[in-house]
Length: 437
Image 1: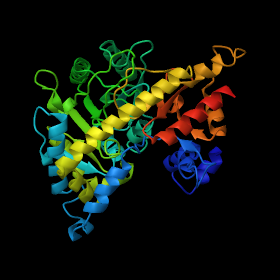
Image 2: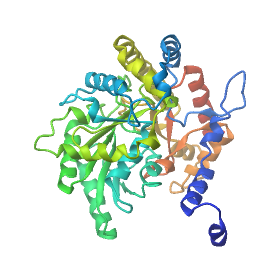
Image 3: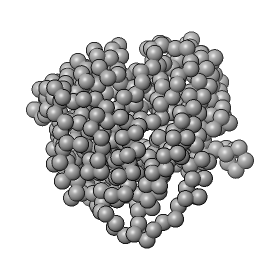
Image 4: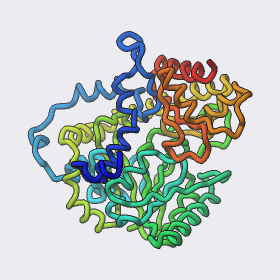
């Protein structure tokens, strides 16, 4: 679009920018053309979107057996921050699974229609336009628009080079990025966004590293925002690999005394990942000590008002202790099996991946290296990620490319393995064919 066309447009410049970015995103087109061996054999095999289809039958059986909607859930009920019933049910559920030092109370929660609105809310509350929020690379790509597109907050990417992003040494990289941003822009960094367990690396931060990050936030009076949307999607890694996986411990389970002001610590969680239900569209902001946050969000909760049906359904789920216990354990077992199958397949086909995972749905894989190994004529220094992406699309398989995740190295992709075995086998077969042929 030319400058003159931009001026003459009937929409705002920020809307134009959003439209231009949307035009580059082919994900929705691919999701409307998904492979099915009988109905749509020529469709895309989609292992690029973080969805968990391993437990859909069990969840649907529960929903279709138990959902009888009371009339009050067709009204505004208890307001935009979620019903009291839901907040009580979620507090009890998370108290059981997150082991918080201070038990959660319904007053600590703000319910939103998904975790993306929750991320946008905390960005809007904590930072003025132009101020920064730190985000380690590689990162969940949608963090960028969630944090910045409407709030106007600047994402400050943190690069680690050869440093393990889950190590104590990596904390220094966050501080270096903070100092550089503040020195070069004159604006403050107001928060540090953590994805714990991590997307796309599938690893957890150790307690010592979490505490070190808290101390950094206290030093610079930044908010620590821990997105724990994959907290219950943890599983046993049965593959022989190093580094050894680190068990998940919620930020809420750490005693903050002498470490950080509790007003600076916040956790996000939702139903999309741990319950394999992206379509329910329900998330939560958990902030135990920051009343200003809660007061501010009362004024904007209308824009993230979750559906009464989703609110009621989630209450039913979380109140059923027997069902959720069985569900969570079986989900973890199936994720473990799917990871092991995918990791062994990659190894047997000479494809490098980042090891040490024990959480979430994905493997971080170096398809660029394997593509070059199969083609000796290609220079080792040539960037090949975009070429590989086009090859994958030719074979009608969709992965998320490393460029979307701020990858520091070319040629990396994220494979989502939380699919039924036949679907996963089809995807992996197409990936190998795209690389080899």
